[in-house]
Structure formats: structure tokens, C-alpha cells
Image (cartoon, rainbow, N blue to C red; front, top):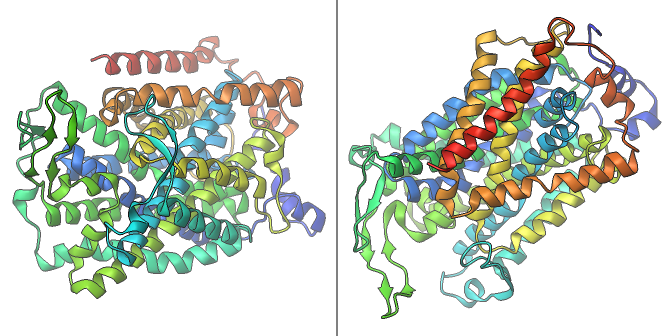
Length: 565
């Protein structure tokens, strides 16, 4: 058994060989650069805070507190795993793929794919929200530019009301995406410098939103208690629910979607291959990124909920004689329709600060910058995941190409093309929820790869070694996340879990093409070395080799059971 992981990639790219430098990602940043690239993660609160508040009701702030607590407890497993592979880019999915590849060739690409399908839609959702914010301060809501639409395809068979359309939001969103692509094209050093400047501006509104109500004492206790799930009377009026199975499903649904935002700081580990000193920079990048997220995801939802309140029925739904809803019910507060869709969140946040129309517009502009930062973070991380997965033989070869600046441009073009299609969709919340099925599966595989790496690579050097209790706790939280998904995913629309699971299986033909047609059934040399394919790592006990299979079997049973409650 090898006592230390392969480091040939590090010595190669630190050499003076210019040809080698241009054939791979460049080591150009410290942990601070990764921190600023990942500083877009706090902006993810803008994506989901409205939908969670409008679905869960008063317990929404508890959802955020519990979810970010789970995320922080998982950090220690993440940090240990990343330290094992300083020569790899692409983040936790790549590192955990190595652990699972010894047990099933298809588990390794599944880990990568589940990560990518969750991260990549940030581009479409973020650019769509940013475009909506910008249009809201430039034109009235009922103006022609905000209301015109060309419907390309009705996707009602997937979800009621879902269509592919072209409108002003799509056109402006594409402009934002191309701007971010241009910045990323210049390499990780230019990206980190750009995100540092953008982050300093974009994080200001989030911190102001979170701190102002606390400093002024403007926290309305009645907007948080009693902690009863949201429920509606027969006439559509709001009432306090009870903590029965339906109530807990709402809570699980909130935790399910919140995880898409609160676990996102793990993207700081996508840049290990580009750290100047990966052994020390890796742990610092993830810890400081997680602490920033703990602050934002705790304070901002409290301020948001305190400002808006739950909301009440303003106008009942209009229903014709056949029972068809002609116009939906209208609510205010957190239940207002644009809060759920996310387009009204910017205006709600600007109202927390106060100061009139000018200040409100300035705040919305800054929130647009926050969303652009989130898009930049996602494009950096998801493209590197595609790049490294291609290097490791898990995805098609063309994704491993980089430009003269060390940017994985073909992976970035793939990201961009995929998101142009998503940007055409009319329901961003559905996109987010469906893609999050993959994200929860990904975290399960990563958290359980922590103990698999301990079992298979006990003698490998670990720049950071987490206490065993935290590794075991991480594995347990992987199952908690799956239970939350099984119980709460369909809160966001019937068939959400099924649609997400189907989408995760799309990796199967892609991997078959790469592995069996392009590579003739063999992994690349570097991947085989990382896997220790020739090592008998279970010589101590043959039963240890069965544990990963048992973990997967238990996960499948758990999801099936919780989804059928």
C-alpha cells in the first residue's frame, strides 16, 4: 500500500516547463483567492429564501438555522478528504469518486454528475433573478417589456404551467451569463481578483440586511412565533397548522431546498489543484468560507422574516362554475407571489434598509452584483468539476481541454449551453428543487466517502485529520439528508423526486461512452493510482469490502420509506 498519495501533478505544474504549464490548470492562488471565488455562496440565500418562507411559514428561520448547522458539521469531513488529493481539481465529488470507484465503476461518475447537475443551474437561476431585479428598477411591472413573451414549448407534462419561453428576462440573463464567461476565460487568478472586488461590493448589502434590524432592535417577535407550520383554511385564509405528518413534510421540504444554498461553501475546495500551497490552503479555504456562510444564512433570514411577517389573504381566488381557477388568491408578506418566485425578494430586502426610492434602487443594484458573484462562483466550480472528471476518465474527453490561461473553456462552454436551455424555463423553483435531488445524493456519497477513505487509505498523509466522531457524524448526516429529501422533495411539486432521480441517471450513457468506447474499459493511469486498483486494501478483513454496498442499500431503503410515508 502506498503511504502517500501521488504528487507528480504538483511537481510538474510547479516546474518551469511552459508547455506543461499550458496543458493544465495553473497554481496561481492562495486560500484567500478561493475564499473570494467562493464568496458568491452567501448570495444563494437570494435563490431560496422566498420559496422557503412562502412554503414553510413561521418556522422558516429555524429551517435556515438547522440547515447551516448541518452544513458546518459536515465541513470537517470535507476538509480531510480534500487534503488527500492536492493534485486534483474539481472539488469533493472528484475526491469521493476515487473512494467509490473501487466498489463500482458507475458510482464514481454518479458522484460527479450529481454535483454538477446541482451547481450548474445556478447560472440560469442566478442570471434570471438578476435580470428580474434589474428590470424591476428600470420599468414598471405592467410595462410591455416586462410582460411580452414568446412561448416556444409547453412542458405541462412535466409540471403544470412550465413552458420554454423567450422574454426580456431571458435576453438580459444571457447578457449576464456572457459577461461572467468573459471574466472566467482569463483564468483563475483573474477570476479571483474580479470576485474579490465584486465580493467586497456584493456582500455589503447582505451584511447590512442581516445586521441593521439587530442593531436597531427592529425584530418583531410575533413574526417568528408560535412555531406552527403553515396551513390554509377552506376559503384560502392563513391559519396555524399542527405538527402532524403533513407539518413535518413542510419542514423537511424547507430543509431540502435550504441545503442547496447552505451546503454550497464546499465549492472552495474546487480549486485545490490551483492553490500555491494546497496542504495549508485547503483547510483554510473551507473553514473561512463556512464561517462567512454561517453568519449570512443565520442573520439574513431572521431579518427578512422580521420585516415581512407571515402575511394574510388579501383577495380570494376566483373560481368558475367548473372549478377552474381563473385567478389565484392574492397574499401579502412572505406569502406574496413574487416572494415565492424570488423576483420580489430584492425589493423586500431593500425595504429592510429603508431610505427611500434612491437607496432602494442602489440596494437592488448591489443585489444584482451579489447574484453575478454567485454565478461566477458556480461557473468556476462546476466547470472545474467537468474538467477533472474528464481527466479521470469519468466524462467525455473533450471536457479536459484548457486555454492558454489555464481555464477549462470547453467545460465552461458546456455549462453555458446547458444553462441557456434552463434559462428559457418559466419556473426556476422547480429547476432548483429537481436539481437538488442530485445535490443531496452527492453529499451522501461524499460524507460516506470520509470513512471509506479512512478504511482504504489509513496510512495516507492527511494535512488535516478530523476527529473520528466528526467523520462518523458526517456519515450519519448523509442519511439525515436523504430522509429529508424522501420526505420533503415532493412538497415542491408532485414528481419532483422522481424527476430528479431520472435526471441523475443520465450519467449512465455518458459514462458508458467515455469508459467503454473512448477508453476501452480502462481508467487513465492517474485515476488507477489514486484508486489503488492493484492494492489489497481489505487484507485485514474481507467483510470491510461489504460496508460500502451495505451503505448504499440502506440509503435506497431509507429514501423509498420516507417518500412513501
